[in-house]
Length: 410
Image (cartoon, rainbow, N blue to C red; front, side, top):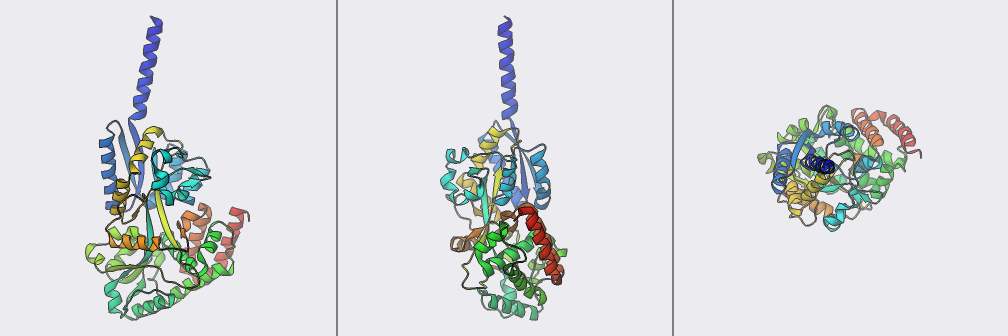
């Protein structure tokens, strides 16, 4: 009788444990704009309908706040799933043992083929720690009506044409370029593209990997080209006083003609402005340098300290489906990570896809996604100092070189 009681108690305990384990997952989502939140709420609702035994508790956090809070989540009380960035930013946490190895899920769900182009970006030392959700291209947004007003008849394809367009816009009383430099990563986009076009992908990645000095003449050439734009006052005044969100009205209201940004910006442009908005590839500076691009990818990860990993994996399997990848991309103005997904209808997203699919010079993730976090943070602070006072460049680069030698010990 005692054995029966003990056996029954053991079964009850196991059943209770299983129920507690399988019932709920917490998901932390970084979002920017109502459309971003809405699509995730819709997808989570559909997951719960398909998996009625699992309840999802989402937390939606504004993107810049999310970046600050993520390290604490991963090292203390972790959610079951986090949304993050592919490449070095993901590898940074995988290297520290803070993300779950989900390599077994890739062949199980057919992801080796469906996410073939993003498998490397999802991996660290040959193991997979992420499921890609979407990716986006970068380029120059521009106001067609302002170009016409300034007498610009075509999209600039070369640096000389770009500078000429900036000069005409300024003469017409229009700020040529808007940039929200208070969010330092928006400045990093300018560094990436100037470096791609002047020095090429291989040299760019040497710098990202800590294998090139910041005092190298190649790096100084990038800042020299950037300084040309600053000296000619082609950027808006006081760019570091604006965030991406606060600078956007300058573009929407016709006070600034261009902005360098990812295709994810497209859905938040008002319809009446969108009708006057075009998108072109960053111009060629040196025709001898193969054209490279940023193709930044987003992903979902399971923290190593997650409480309900089995159901978290079920959620990832659902998100990885082609139709879900397509829904995310369509809502966010991005491109579906799954190569079996339908492409979005958004014309800017489609133009971004054409740019990336035709790229022969290499595709990087992005400045702060390709580089060790500490070095990237210091590099972007240096960019803010530079655009505020370009005369400090040598001092800034010398300090960055000291940081590089300390971080990489090279």
